[in-house]
Image 1 (cartoon, rainbow, N blue to C red):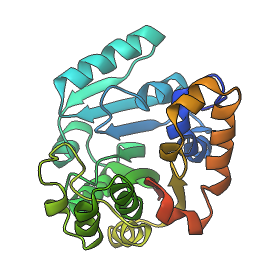
Image 2 (spheres, helix red, strand yellow):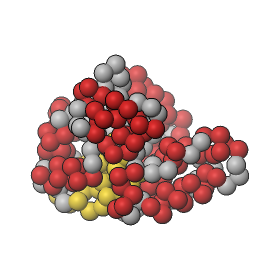
Image 3 (cartoon, one colour):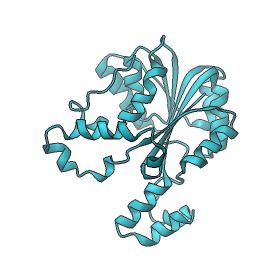
Length: 244
């Protein structure tokens, strides 16, 4: 079982507390098979393995997989790492092989429809996919607040290629909650939950969290309080969605 985070002890958990809360019921049952696509250095995978689950990470970066292996050894768990991407996922893990697939930060940089179709083949009947994506409305506001007005306008109009000019490391695509839900349903999934992630976290000065006693815990409580309120979804940096 994945325990509820005690945020005062782990400031870095502010950004992911809502996601872990949502995954808690999925991971609280008997040990299951989990596939983390693009899981990188194991920020999610290692903790899931610590909870007693069998975890496979598929990532295109050999450096990230090496860091994953070190991270897993440091805490005494096993995580299978395979170099690859979603296009070759079936060759790595096979069909009907997972009870849970983590798809975090992936749909922005691949063909979302094709990726979801592949994930559906990997999941066993009744399995769950956890999707985390960048949210467009918040990105428009962030660009405008930073003074990048032309980028904000381009992103608002959906011209993300123009907005990304000179910013190759940025996500290639961002989603609204409605767009993401439609994509997931078109792929044959039933949406079970949608959460607003990082509504306030990116707006609060880091110095406040570092030096103000209780600020981290209070911020996590605030994020949790609005995570399931639909009116806050357009303000969230990320959208988290669970589907079966």
